[in-house]
Length: 279
Image (cartoon, rainbow, N blue to C red; front, side, top):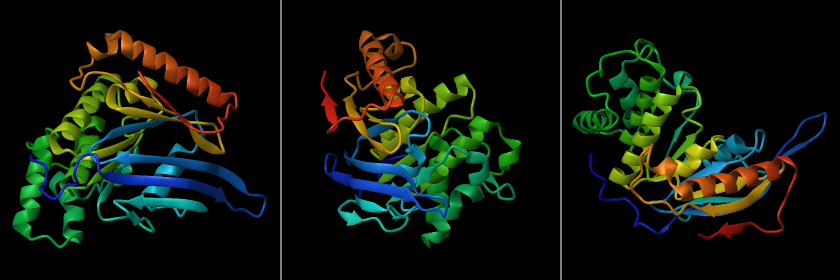
């Protein structure tokens, strides 16, 4: 599966989040979930987000994807303000089983957003076939989600996002509900698709090791109300595998650093400004 020719130039501005705020209003009192989050993601980057439980990671991703209106600040995709789900973005959620329609086949599930784009049938079939091939499901297009394992169902959700040909792919703890071996396989799948397609990826996870293994950068969030605690650069080789990479001394150093930051976040540490960790 090759990268579409219309992809943004690598390194150009893809996603910008400026002073994002989110407060949930309720009769019993307001809850400030996100206080002031600012960062940017360049085209072709793979950036991970971690933080303590309740740090507002999912709220942040929903605001970025246009599924939730922020209270303040601005999100822009390729220079255009996001006021609803943008066409150049696809999202993969943790609850993959709920995102798939059990009465539709694998092929029909993957094809669904392509119908909304009003693509011709031949083009839809081409994109679906390429996506299923890319995630290793070319042999089960006529199966139903309930006939597949959890890992295979999540591959269907990823295939659906890939077939849409997004400029940026948002992933919200997509592997939290699968076993360790399946998780490792899916991590490698994301890296493979990212390298092959050149798609920009913003990946939210609670797993520090996963964030370091996948990402070029790791954004560490503070506790609620959320700000960016630190933007950690991941100085690991581009070619990664589950054994060599995780045994690299630099991987261990980065794990310790991010773990320390998450522990600080749990204790309420809040920086005056976000900083960047350089190797």
